[in-house]
Length: 426
Image (cartoon, rainbow, N blue to C red; front, side, top):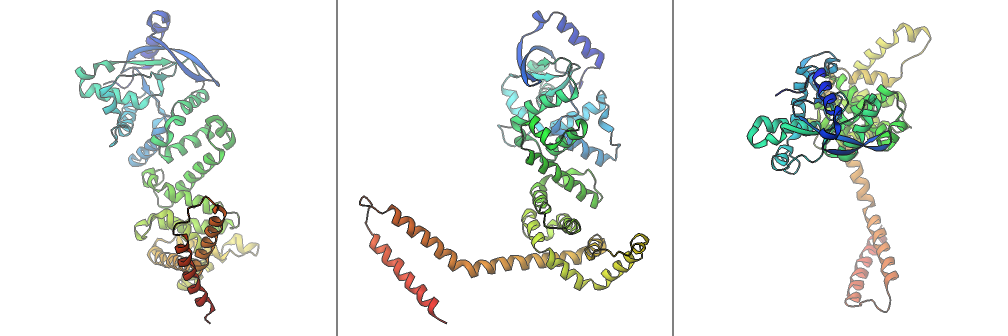
């Protein structure tokens, strides 16, 4: 199986089709271009002709992961015409077409039905919409040609020549807005948005308007990715996104905590380091990490105080080292005490002991919250009971069924008397 004709072959093939479009076209397909829909001619082309689009949002994190795993150059996937890279991209897409859910398993679906929507191709033959479907057709052909030979020719809509920005916007409309939650990992979505902002200089607001997403959603997603990048760098696993895909909600909680304006930048950094330590050692915690992150935030002062007591000598050494810094001593400034705690947290040799402090203080916060609930539980219950009694009086009228109401009221009165007696005791 070829994963795309060469550029001259593709362009010659397209020119031949366009030279007699009335005879070769099998229909029209509406495609959103520049804010309005245009009808584009649909043709049949060999399944081996199109090239996968390497900027495809679904596979961005898989490409980054591949670069990390193979220790490759950052621009490894820049040669979009490379047969080798196209084959690697096919492998990425192959991971995305199979599902344990039969309704979402593309090979199962397309083995029983025909292609209905055309693939959307750029003017030079790269797939904007339909990369997974193209991968599926190729897999089915390889698996059983006789059974699936209907996919030896696939329907495609070939766009006029467009600039990269227009192509990205078409992908947004045709791919992301339709099923972004179902098929895109949060990392891939964030990588796609961030790449687009860097590439075209968009602000969060501009990108939100172009993609139909909320500005806050885009800002949150990109910030969470930035936090995840810092985490991966802190454990020397930069770009190893497989390690963070399942921790989406933990990074979301970190984003919420770090967004609180009352904290100083240095305190936010200290919290981030503690959270990173917890995520790295998630198996040391009894609950899910997204539940523990807010608890670490609440317990931060307790943790700092305990670290200052337990690591007095180590912190003194760190402070002494910092005070000899020429820049600081030259202008008569001393580092914030939190700076020493950050350096302590970053010390891998102290990791296990620091974790013990973190888990201990988290437990204290949990117990404290339970105690508060216990102390206020009677008052809370009475407030709710009062609310429902007021509601009952509101609904009471001549049409109300009074069966057993006196019995219920007597029972309520009995419990009320018990509480009155309890409250009166000193």
